[in-house]
Image (tube, rainbow, N blue to C red; front, side, top):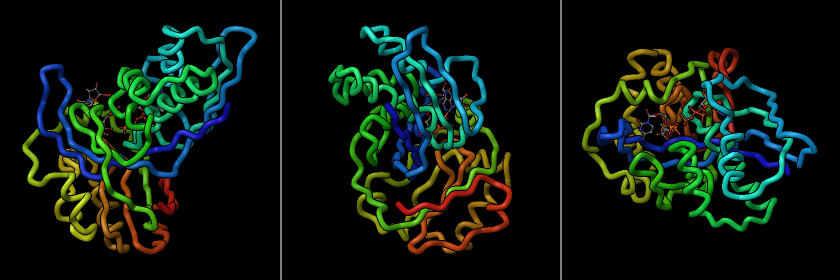
Length: 271
Ligand SMILES: C[C@](O)(CO)[C@H](O)COP(=O)(O)OP(=O)(O)OC[C@H]1O[C@@H](n2ccc(N)nc2=O)[C@H](O)[C@@H]1O
Ligand SMILES: Nc1ncnc2c1ncn2[C@@H]1O[C@H](COP(=O)(O)OP(=O)(O)OP(=O)(O)O)[C@@H](O)[C@H]1O
C-alpha cells in the first residue's frame, strides 16, 4: 500500500496554561497543506523491516513514529510482519507535523489494508498516544485544537485559491524546549472568531503564534524571514507550530524570494 502523509501549518497558536503534567494548554487551528512524504508497506516473509530515504530524520532514541504506530495496532490486532519504506519530503523539527502525519497515516492505512474497520474516533485515540499533533491527521481537515492539542473540533476556514510560501531555514527546534521558553497567558482574541468571522486581512494584527516572541529572540533570522514575507506582499505570515518553518499566504502567486530560495528549504504551493 502506498500513501502520502501531508504536513500542516498552525493558524494562530495560543499557549494559555502550564498543566500539572508538564504539558501546556493551547488553542490553535491546524490546517493541512499539500507538502507530502511517501510511505509504502507490503507484507514481509520475515521480521518487519523499516527503511527511509529523502531528508534525514534525527534520531530521538525512540522507534520511528511509523513503527510506533504499527506496533500500537499490532499489540491489539493480529497484524503480519511488514516491509516498510518511508520517503521524507517534509522537513523534521520544522513545526510541520511531519512525523505526526506519518504515524496517523500509517494507522489509517493499516486499518484500511487489513480491514480492521476502525472509525476515526477510535483511530484518534490511538494517535493521541503517539503525539499531540497526531489525532489531527486522522480526519486531516482544518480543525481547532485545544487542551494539549488533541481535542479537535472542525474549523470553518477555507484558504482554497490562496498561495502559500513555506520556508524552513534548517533550524531544528525541540518542541519541548520551545514550550519551556514560553509564558502562558489568557488570549486577547477568540481564535474561532478570528478565523471564521474576521477577514483574512485582519489576521496580521490578531492571529498570533505565542512561540514567536521567545523563539524570534533566540533566532532573529526567523523574524527577518517573516518580515520579508510581508514585504513581498503576504496577506498573513507566521511561524508554524514550534518552528522553525515560516509561511506566507498570498492572493496571487508571489515572486520567488531568491535570498531565501537559494539557501533554505523553500516551497510555493496553491492551497
Ligand atoms: C507545537 C505543536 O506542534 C502545535 O501544533 C504541538 O503542540 C506539539 O505537538 P507534537 O510535536 O506532537 O508534541 P509532542 O510530541 O506531543 O510533545 C513534545 C513535547 O512538547 C511539550 N508539549 C507538547 C504539547 C503540548 N500541548 N504541551 C507541551 O508542553 C512536552 O514537553 C512534550 O514532551
Ligand atoms: N517519521 C518521522 N518523521 C519525522 N520525524 C520523526 C519520524 N519519526 C520520529 N521522528 C522524530 O520526531 C521528531 C519530531 O518530528 P515531527 O516532524 O513530527 O515534528 P515537527 O516537524 O517539529 O512538527 P511539530 O513541531 O509541528 O510537531 C523528529 O525530530 C524525529 O526525531
